[in-house]
Every structure is written in structure tokens, then in C-alpha cells.
Image (tube, rainbow, N blue to C red; front, side, top):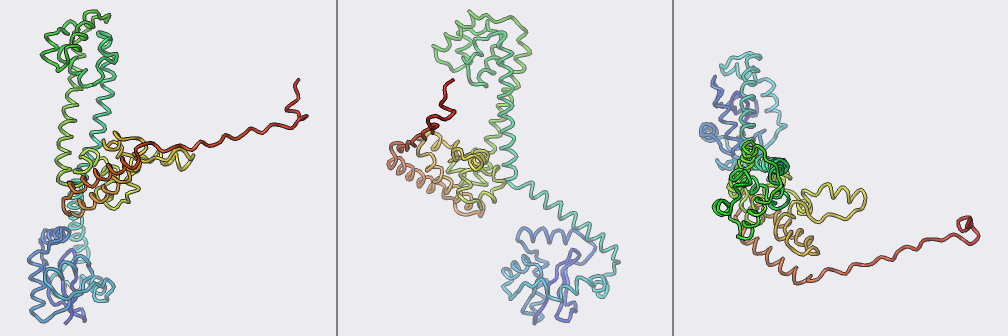
Length: 407
């Protein structure tokens, strides 16, 4: 016999081909029961109360079940090993849902249309809130937020450091004039030593890991400096803010690495947590990256250059964000494009494995990449010869024309 399973926000019902209610579940004043049912359904889990509900129908002789909810049909067929089908347009479903108030009254659940609407509204709002919370808790969503925060912090450190060089340069211009290029080290020197008179050989040795030659040079420059005497304390406080930002940057990068190892172990294994996270952020999510073709992954982050190529015919870009990977950036320019094509294909495989929770084969993929790169380097040891296009000759005017008449 055939039974039609109808799920509503107020309860689960089973009707026969005549529309008669055979059984029902979750039907009471407690809204949390239906919220739990749909939340579990979204997670691919069927509650025991629902399984008992269908089991009672099976025991009553019903051996075929029809659903208008595809996900519920799939899970029920799998968990209870029963014959099932999906038919959203079956008249039994349409008639029941149109006459829901009358059907509920027939089994003693007396609610007016307005009361039913309020119940539906309350449950719908709670389910939407749960879905929003779950979406915000997804690891790739957090990864995107962290990578974008890191970009802002790095830009801020660079901007703050530029102002520090200008400000501290009034007191010790020789130090800030490209002698110390690392922004964070410069901030540490200002915060720890401050006044140039404290740039003694002893202080430099105790606080910084510099070579003897560099220590002596710094000490000599401090003694011979032409800078002005200004209030150093306020500059030191400013330098401490830069150091604090850099410490937070390091903390976020470590946290990001842990997240990436859990969420995208294959992607992290072949290209690193930072570049992998940037690719996820640029794609929009791990899912979008997984379904993206290799040719598009290769140019992620190079959209402006690609548009210029399409518009004006300038040189076509060969890589985007993946250029930051040391195997591309540190290799010969004429084979970078080939390595980019290779790694973008492997990134696509890794992203698919990570999204669908497949095996962790990052080591195997890494070995394949290394072998292919060696083959490319052997095959193309020298840059290809560039074809020299002949220059177009300028057309000269005929003799006697106005262009050739000298005045």
C-alpha cells in the first residue's frame, strides 16, 4: 500500500490516496520539536520520533512512501531501507496543504488560520536564525574574515611605519634613511632604545641580533648624527603600537594555519596556509574554489591585468595570487607560466578533496608537483628565442608632392 508523507512546520503527517490522515508526529504546542526536526534534517539526521512514525506505518502494511521533500525522501529511504519516491506535484500533497486548517480540526487540533500563521511565522524565524548562525560558523567563512583582517593589519603596519620613519627621522635621520628597512625591527629599536645616545655597542648587542659590523656602524652613525633633540617618549609609545599590531598579526597567522589544516589540509599541504586562505577568500568560499576550473584558479587575483589584456591587447597574465608561491616566484621567468598551469590544476584537485572531505593526499600531490617542475626545468633550460618582428617602413611621399617641397 502507498502512503504520502507530508512535512509541515506544525507537524509530520501521513495520508492515503483518498487524503485520509493515517498517522502524525510532532503535533503539539511545543515549537522546539519541529525546529529540532528541521535542524537535524539539514544536518542529514532523522530524529528517532520520525523513524518510529514511519516504522508504525510499515507495521500497518504500508510498503511504499511518496514525499514532496527530496531530502527527507532520500534520508528515509536510506535509513529505513524502504521503497520511496519523490513527486512534488501529486494532488494528495496539494489538497492537504490547501486544506491544512480543516485537516487539523478533523484530528482535534483546533487552531484558527491566524493562529496557524503565527506558529508558522515563529518557527520560520527560528529556523532562519539557526541557518544564519551555522553559516557564520563555517570555517571557510572565518578563514575569509581572518585573511581580510590580515591584509588590513599589514597595510596599517606599513602606513604607521612610514609615519614613524618621518617622525623619528627628525631625531636620528641616518637610521631611518634605508639603513634599517624592516619596519618592525625599526619600531623595536625606537621602542627599546629611543634616544640615539642609547645606541651604544653594549645596548645593541644585548637587545638585537645584529652582526658586529652592523653594530659598529649604527653606533658610529648615532654619535655623528645631525638630528634634532625632541621628545622621544611619545614616539616610543607610537612604536609600541606598531609592535603590538605585528604581534597580533603573528597570532592571527598561527590561528589561520590551524584552521586551514582542519578545513583544507590538502590545499595547505601543497601551497601553504596563507596562499591557500587567500585563494579561498578570492574565490568566495572553499566550495566555489572546488568547483572552479584550473584556468580560472591560475588567474585568481590577476583580474585587472586580464581585463587590460582583453581591452587593449597588452601582455596576457600568466598567474595571479599563486605567484606568491616560492616555486613560481623563485623560478626562471620563462617557465613560470608552465608551473602556474601545473599548480593550479593540483589546487583544483586539493580543493575538491577538502570540500568533499576526501582523503588527505597532500604529500602525494606535492611529490607529483616537484617531479613535474624538475621535468619542466630540464625541458626548458634556456629562454625561448624571441621573434624579431620587422619594422614597418615609413611610406614616403612622391617626388614633386607638397610634402617634399622645401621652403
